[in-house]
Length: 153
Image 1 (cartoon, one colour):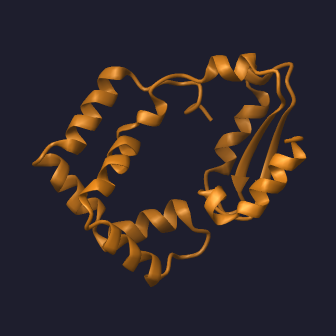
Image 2: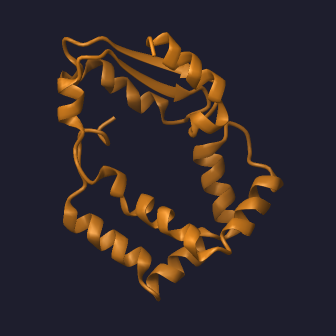
């Protein structure tokens, strides 16, 4: 759970992003990351509760041919989603917090700290588990809608 309140230092983000965008090392990294076996490994590890299927692998192979598809992957892998801490927002939020994990997410246990951390003291923090693994709005849109409705939206 430390990824939300902990920012990645700017110098590290810059180094990571430049490495992934470099013509030599970036292309080498992507030639490895776009390898079917590596895609299978990381998809099985993080994205699916069961083994990923050949249709998924075929689609990733097709999509990886588009250079413009690399930019969001470069940003994500460089750590740009953690460009700053979100601790203030968590501390100052007047709304109850709901931390949602997929039933197949192997990292869900890492989120238990949200309930006990000082960031959430004096706030209601609920951990919810729904069907899916890691990319829940795509895997289980109706489950996400139900959670949003449960929170009163």
